[in-house]
Length: 187
Image (cartoon, rainbow, N blue to C red; front, side, top):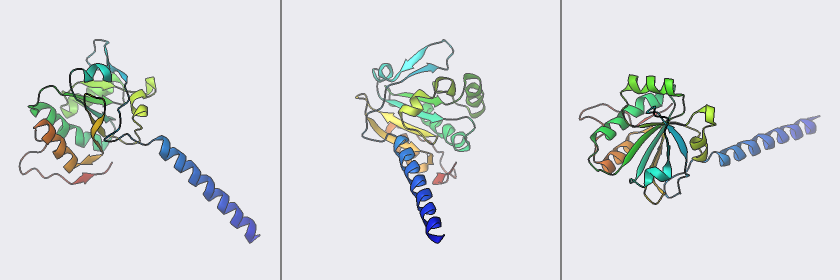
């Protein structure tokens, strides 16, 4: 009887181990040095237009901040990213928020949290095409993509040092002097 129990436990452990390894491999988020997948996403601006990464890269490097409106860490992080967007002095960059929600919820989020940067929609109605192509399993996930299509900077979640480094790239400060900001914030 003990031998059967041991065998069953080994099979269960092996099955769970295989499943989690396979899942982790499938959802590996792209990072610095990797080529960013192209996408075609609806522009929240409401003109019915769509944007592709290829088109955006013609104007210069592209910054993408993927988020979900119900995510507390996104609610905390996006206003700091907005400060970089508003304060940037290096022309030629394209900064975009990429919402995993519908247009109505995204507009409400942008209004509530003061987000004015252009926003693209990557929602469930379309199967999250960009989020899946980028291997996202957590939000916020952020990427800086150079003109050649390669990712030069990426960050997942809220990491103060990452946002400071991003601010340096855009010559804009995400944090006010004396503002108490944690090193990290989990979701």
